[in-house]
Length: 562
Image 1 (cartoon, helix red, strand yellow):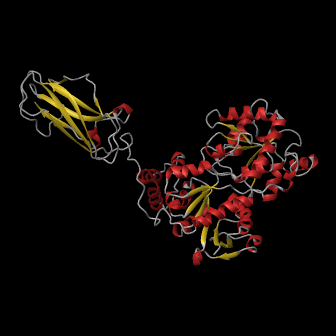
Image 2 (image 1 turned 30 degrees about the horizontal axis):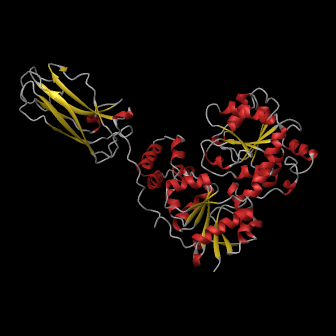
Image 3 (image 1 turned 180 degrees about the vertical axis):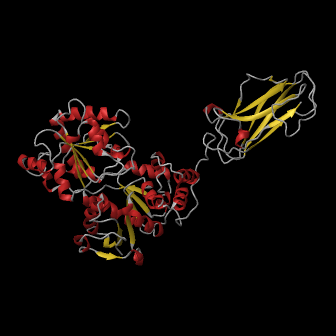
């Protein structure tokens, strides 16, 4: 029996690159010899464009997978994929992961709707105690970006699938390293070449120079002079602010920037342009229909497609730019390592990014021959590596191979992953036990003894070795007499290694009992440092380097009047 696929994805008119990708993939996938039929699963609140609905059988979500059909999910990182996430957690299938990081979607459908308990439950399920700690911080208003990108919130979803497809070897390596039990394979992202890309010149994209000039006029661009483009949904991680600031650099006074795509409310592009003094040279179109999107590419000399930090996505908008023979500048980072150097120039993320980008843009725009060569290499790269028929064949081959494979997880509610315990640098409860051998009474005056100090970690945290510095643990030994510590200046006894929860370490030191007399034990309510005259007190306690005594964090202390 051939493959019978239930295709689950946003589709036009949804304003997302994955909808365009799916529209292009479907006819090539249906043409594969092992595919018997494909039907589309209707997603709640997502109407289908008439031309899409007319060409395919449509089924309701409740019928997903019925009769042995294989779900093929297209998974992204925005609200268009909320229903897909829920379906894929319930019904295992083959999942095409377009974004490695799904934390933004999780925040949107949980915290964005005041469902903090669900956010905590899912993040803990994906990332253990670290996810729980981040969820608690979010609950009280900590909305920094670092945890969003550090905790991708994909583990439960991927472990419920029969297999996972990504669009680059870098992304596949990340998934394999995170969870070797998940089947993952890199397949090309199918991107059709524009009809005009057969031209021998990569910059004659859709006609002659007069046509290109008319396109520029429609977008309010100069007919002559360099035009840079940034394409796709604009968020802070697209680094469009760096491109705007680069325009203010010497040598780029004539350059204009065309920004095509919806702009996130988190990004103030107009304000950035005003502050940089280049507002008249930054043109923001908002969302454009597919045909106008292609015309905008043709108006540009060079595309800027930066990402930092990254959700690990293979940018469909970038591939469409390259398919049109437009050269590009990308970030020297993460998934961009899959692109050949001849296709795209690179700039490093960081504080020097705007200056480095400006220098690179000046260099490229001054060398038209290099731009032509990059554009031709870009178009050829897409033709050779991203042919839609070959991409569909790779997807169909994986579906056929994995159609009956068992998911790595039997259910969506499996136990959280085992992650390394929190450290003594971060955790605020450090319970433990302390035993001392060799300090038994009586202890004659002047006698030197070797003490064995046995320290046990009874907390949930991993106690750092002393060599780690701040957060490292060391045992402090004091011998107090007449208000003085007779061992002051002696080095602390640092933990020689990290001490995981439940483990113990033995430290040794020598102590000589000085001349003096003992006194009865002090009353329990007496302050620790109030040692009566004539009393000699041996006092031992673990400390944190750069912090406080462990006893203030639930840790142990040992003392004896000798």
